[in-house]
Figure 1 (tube, rainbow, N blue to C red):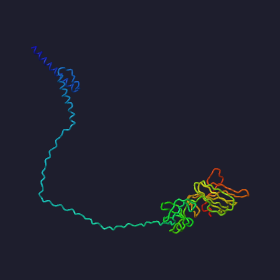
Figure 2: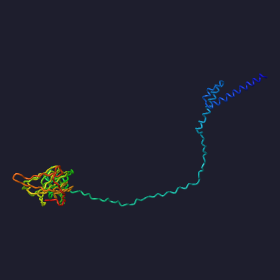
Figure 3: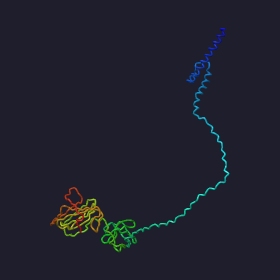
Figure 4: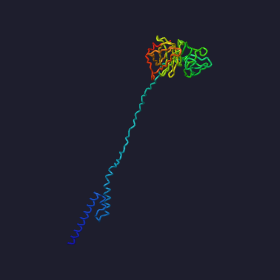
Length: 323
C-alpha cells in the first residue's frame, strides 16, 4: 500500500514538474524567444526548439494583416433589354444654312505720289573736282564726271560755287559755271551753303600802313576777327581756324578796337557763324605808331592765357561790325 502511494505520489510529482516546466517554457518564449532556446530545463530541449519556432511564427502573424484580403468582385448579371419593335422615326433633318457672300466693294489703296527729287545739276565737263570749300584753294575731296547728277544743297557768290551731294553721298563744292555743270533749278531758290574758310584775310579797306598784328586762335572753335577804328568802322577782317594764327600787315597808324566771334558753320553770304556763335570786343585800344626806325607790332591770343593783360566785353551780335 505504501509502495503504491509512493508510486502515485511520484507520478503526481512528475506531472507537476512537467506541468511547471511547460509553463515556464511558454512564459520564457513569449518574453524572449532567444532565451527559450537555451532554457535550463534538460528534458524537453528539442521540444522547446520546435515550440519556439511555432511560437515565433505565430508572433509574426500580425504582419500579414498589412496585406489586404482580395474580395471577389460580384459577378455582373446581364440584363436583357428588349428591342423596341416600333418603327423608328427618322430624325428631323437639321437645316443647313448656306451663307451667300455679301458683295463688299474692294477699297482701292490710296496711292501717295512719291516725290523723286529732281537733280539740281548735271555735270557736263569730262571731269570736275569736288572741293571742301567754294574755291580752288580748298582741297579736293572727290571727283565727278560728265553725266553725273548732283543734288544741290547750297550755293555761294550767286551760284559761282554749288554745294552738292554726289551719287556716292559725298558732300562738297563744285564750280557752278555753265562750262562745268548744267543747273536745273533757279539759283535764287538755293540757300547759302555753309563751309569752313581757310585762315586768311577776308576783306580790308586800307593797306598803306606799317603796323602789324598777329592773332593766335587757341579757342576750340574757329574765329572771325575785325579790326575797327574807334568809331567802329571796319578796317580789316579775317578768318582764323582753331589752332592757327593770322598775320595782318599794312595797318595804318591810329587807335583800333579788335572784335571777334567764335563758332561753327560759316555763312559766307552774311559773314557770320550759324552755330554756337559768341561775340566779344577788346576793352583796351590798340595803338599803332610808326617812326623812321620803328613800327608797332601786336600779338593777340584769343583764349585766356597765362600772363594775358587784355580784358574783353560781350557784344550783341547785332552790333558786331560788318563790311
